[in-house]
Length: 141
Ligand SMILES: [Zn+2]
Ligand SMILES: [Zn+2]
Image (cartoon, rainbow, N blue to C red; front, side, top):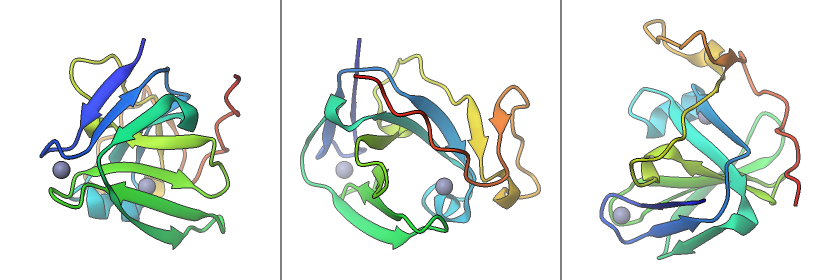
């Protein structure tokens, strides 16, 4: 069981052979910048399970944790595609909007809720963290 996906223009495609370790919604201010004011939705997969075809562009910054976060997007259409942390190279974050529908993934955790705008409606069924949650457990092989 796996997933396929692509950016808006189709220049970058992704194939994932595996299930996510976690699916989260992130309200941090940096995510609001790339998600037009809302949260990003992110599925965390094992890096080894992901195959990317096409060329992405990326930017990096040092997060509050001290780790370097690198975010990738399609240089042609701008679709946010992936992100990853220098602390956990074995995991890679795939933006949920990239995945082909239909799929069965939905967020079960909201993070950085302290930075969400006042009007945000956060599903109480999700586990919520005001800032960065503990790292997801290392994936088993
Ligand atoms: Zn594109
Ligand atoms: Zn974020």
